[in-house]
Amino acid sequence: MAAAEGVHRPIWKEEEVNRIVAEIKAHEVTAVVSFQGIPARQLQNIRAELKDVATIQVARNTLIHRALQKSGEMVLELFDRVDGQTALIFTNLNPFKLFKLLEDSRTPAPARAGDIAPKDIVVEKGPTSFRPGPIVSDLQNVGIPAAIEKGKIVIRETKIVATSGESITARLADVLEHLEIYPMEVGLYLQAACDGHLIYTPEDLHIDKKAYFERLVHAASNALNLSINAEYPTSLTVAPLLQKGSYEAMSLALKAEVFEPEVILILLSRAQCAALELVYKLPNDVLDDELVALKGTAASAQPAGHMQARQKELQKEREEKKNEKEESESGIAGLGALFE
Image 1 (spheres, one colour):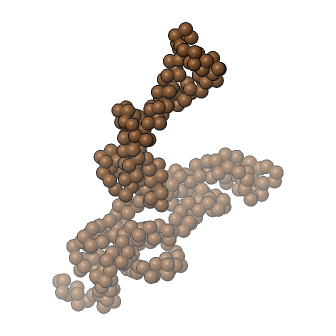
Image 2 (image 1 turned 45 degrees about the horizontal axis):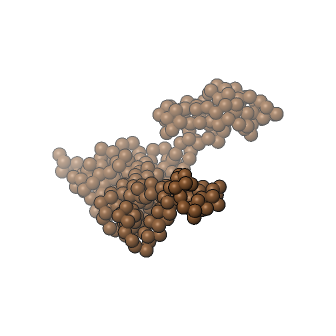
């Protein structure tokens, strides 16, 4: 019976199937796309836009099915997505780039009765270009508050006239077209793509670039923080690690009172401040004449100056104790620039 069917099958159908099979074998990626509701002229425009990177093949679903059967088990998995007005795309682009190209090729289109709103349809408040007339009633009948002001029709309140997934009525479609609001998108919608031994769906291929970028920066920041805490030297961590080591060495040298050039000046400053604080606390009768004179001549200005210096020194010590944490996070704030 199968042989008899083969004998009577029109030659053009066999040629069509063989042409599809040849295209599948000649390209790395085969994708099933829907072109439901696309005018012929726009389909031709999309063909022209993609001609350098992809081939679009429109055929009957039965012929597509037979071609997929002849092309192997993996490609045959695409058949579950062949429904309605379907075409095949053959390309050597990876599926993610193909998906993005198809998204970018879509154009706004007016809604028709029975269309499903792809997202919330919002009519913004404000003046319109319409003069008073029956359109006021048309607007109000679909829930848009309208009034006449200064000889023009004004929409008095921003309204959501259809929510995502809701069917659009004929009356609303007519009003939206008058308002030049085109909520629909016309173009090719990828249903599935076969790349080698992998099948991709639209859910796999749709990427929120902003969220992906934020996750990437966050992951890189965590990696940098871990590297610094683990003291793992890399081109990005060596500078903060050296700064961290420098601060820790200075803190240790000050605590141990090591007489090194960079340390001795700070130690002498500390000692001087401590001595002066003690002088101002002691009564004059236990001080020699030189210290009494010093205390008297600088009673108003000198103590305050030295106390301020001491306070700054103590503040510096407190800040040094926090350097390890601060340095572990250094460079993270500007890390996003590495991915721009």
